[in-house]
Image 1 (cartoon, rainbow, N blue to C red):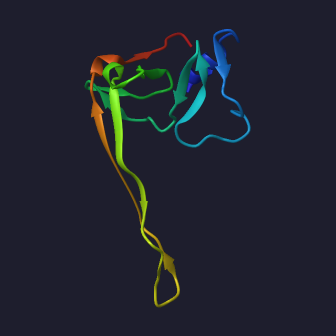
Image 2: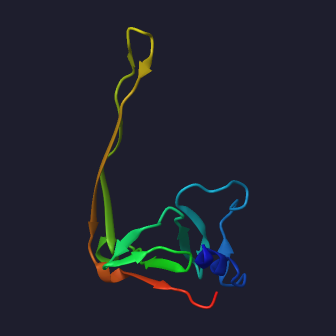
Image 3: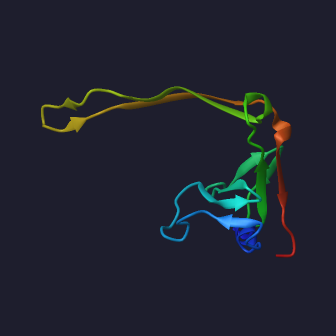
Length: 123
């Protein structure tokens, strides 16, 4: 992703990479580092998402959001009401162990104005 590469090239007083970022190959969304004290999250799986009728994809596109201090100044709320529930282990007649897991949460965009997207040019 060209946006992540551009952020990584910023001077050390602006961008600080996350500890251990080059030790393992990241899978899924991960913390790239901090830009002016704010976390930068990179999601390589964000390929063909639609925002406002436009596809947010490509190496030069990005999404920017704000994480507030509380639910009144946030743009999105994630509220887990069953964080993780595990059933007791069940041993079947052919001696295989089975265990079930459940997680449930509510998601709500409270203020869509706290998110934007854009494109970098001439990179």
